[in-house]
Image 1: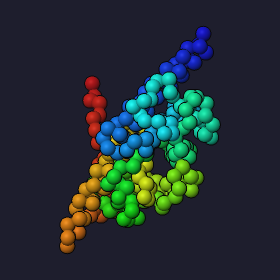
Image 2: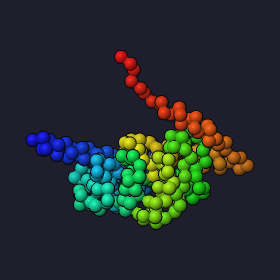
Image 3: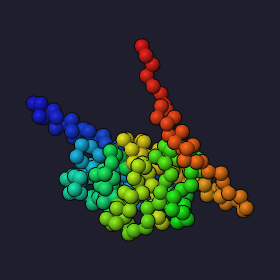
Image 4: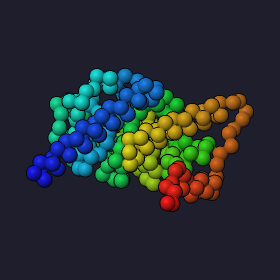
Length: 227
């Protein structure tokens, strides 16, 4: 009986996680961070990774379309093929404490990835991603080389840019991973806007200033009141 309850609980957890993947993937499209079937989203549930499929518009995804692979990439659930960027997602889960990953082709972030080796610290929210955001050197999409380049750029960070490609962010929840993606795209847009004025260069934050912000962000948000 206990084993049956555990099994049913696991099925319900996977179903709920899949709904979150669908909702987040649709949000990336609705908010202009991807076009068509580009980009991908995943979430980890135990030793399973639920991930969006390859080449299927997000609005067509249904509860019964759930896809899951193990941490070695072996598909254990679903009939649809996983995203071609599966190596990228698995690399993040194997190397970090991530429970959710969001990959987009956001316009401003991708533009920045073609111009610099790291996003200049234009805003204090740089600290929310662990520090100055690096650009991973270009490699073919879906390749192990791209995943390896990404991991180097992600060292001590929760987000990076992929040269001539897009963004990768991760978090402990889909909401956190998505928020980091949105913040990264906004900062890229901000830097492009400020640096576009002829004869002017935007002021940037120092390493010390970013460290100060990082310390303050540790206590950011609502905390429970003592009762």
